[in-house]
Amino acid sequence: MRRQKLLSTILAGQLLLIAGLVVVIALQGDPREGLSAWTPEEVESAVAAGPGFVITRETYLGALREKGLLATAGPQAEARREVLSSLVDRELLALEARARGIDRRLEVRQEVQRLLADHLLDSELGSLTLESFSREAVEGRYEADQLEHSRPPAIRLAHLYFRADTGRGEAGRAEARARAEAALERARGYHATALHFGQLAEELSDDEKTKSKGGDLGMVTRDSGDLPQEVVDLGFRLQAIGEVGGPVESDEGFHIVRLTGRRPALERNFAEVELEVRSKLLREARLERHRELLAAVRARYPVTVREERLGLDEVASAGTGEEKP
Image (cartoon, rainbow, N blue to C red; front, side):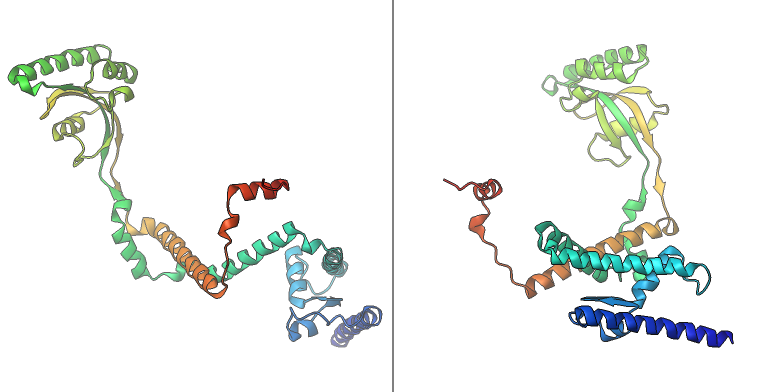
């Protein structure tokens, strides 16, 4: 009995849809006319149709799913009819908009173009996922980018530099050392705060590149090749942030060194960065496919650029409606 009742309900619904289509045909013509955007199967399985549009079963079920209304019976029937009604309303409003020429407005056409391009890109790039790359490929990239996943310890240093007058031999070096020792006493006497050390750098240092920046040398590793090795070695012997050491002698003079920061070594194994590596591979693969797609469509659809119309004068006059003199 329940089975027969269910079949009767389904049959009644189909008859109601057919009747609706007959009314539409009688009043406005066959709604299937102008439906070339849909497949014959979609048209035949429509839950509603109008002049130039159909609401497919897939669209209807998707709307019900969003509303949580996929139950087959119960008090939700009225709510389901409201969902269908809202879908019909949207189609009818779109019809009216086209009838009024709104679809021909520049901003509407630009928005449609943007949506079409976005959907094409989603279709082309969406098949690439984090799982599109084999473990071997990901491990290979991890090894190739090892420097990004591990780094040696580093310190940040500031210095006062005292150039030795090499033309005067030992006397020139002795004078530079004496200046450095006097600066060291001043720095330690004021506990070598960053502000005070910066003032000393501006007042005393012979390093024109760093004296206006508090003597800052930036981050330094043990094998840094930009600084005298004697300065680097002294910096790594310093223990506490703010500690000052020296003077230390290099080929060109003497240095007072202050430790201003410390960065620990970084060592991340494959398991820690696998997701990061996969994400990088995915970004690169999608970018490459994007480039390939653009190259293909540019080859398929020739574009003519009117170079003579790209000047700023022409653009400005087009925007104001004024003729160029």
